[in-house]
Image (cartoon, rainbow, N blue to C red):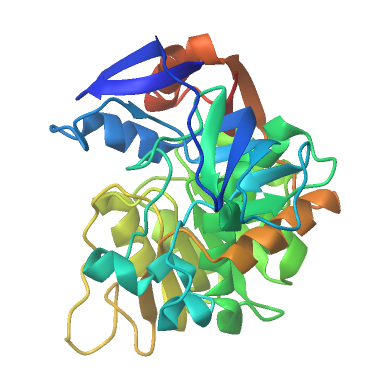
Length: 346
């Protein structure tokens, strides 16, 4: 089969490799679509090899069951689904509580094995997955379904972790209307009564947010925090979701989150918010506010995201590329030239 593989730091090649062999508890999935994420860019930029063998990228995967392990029950050849990306142990206290994304077996890093980040991923014609990672999608289009595995999962989990702040009358700020941010706007509009303010550096991204339920869009500049405070009576936003995560956006979140509000860090830009133990006031960290570095999501979050998509209340904006054009798609993503989510079709 063909697979898009990382063969060294920054080196991506389309290679011919054997179709994976599955174990008794696995499935072989014929890949129908594979989404491209900023995390894939981060993996490519790591200055060392994650493993000795070439690594097939891709953790947003939708496809059809092609082969079933001998101990797997309840599934049939031809079933359509997506892949839950946290391949957790399933038996530790976090997993049995439904917190598979912070499985104890993953240690303090709390990142269970994930396709494309250790095990081979889905930018290929076939992938081996644990049967427990399969989530049915019914008749959803594969290109629409694949990005749900991260873009929707991660957004849903971050939003679900701030439900207490998202009551009617609340304001939610979404910073960065990219692959995850435009999905977050839709999830907020579909599952909460909060007013949504989108923030980005591009007018077209703000227009995209508007079409998906944002009440207002603000271009990032020196006055953005003041503009958000002005629109919230000087108090700030009850929830701020940062899908960029650089110093500038982290500082913006600190300056505009409300007392008792929620700041959720999702973007991986290595930004450092200034949280001090000084008395609250001015642009600093307000009393009662919480910050959470949110990773992935639970299997339940993914199932609920799929339900939103199947109901028509969540639709991912996608740009479709052939598997051969994967390097071009990744380059366009790195340069901010993807509207929504890039998806590869093998």
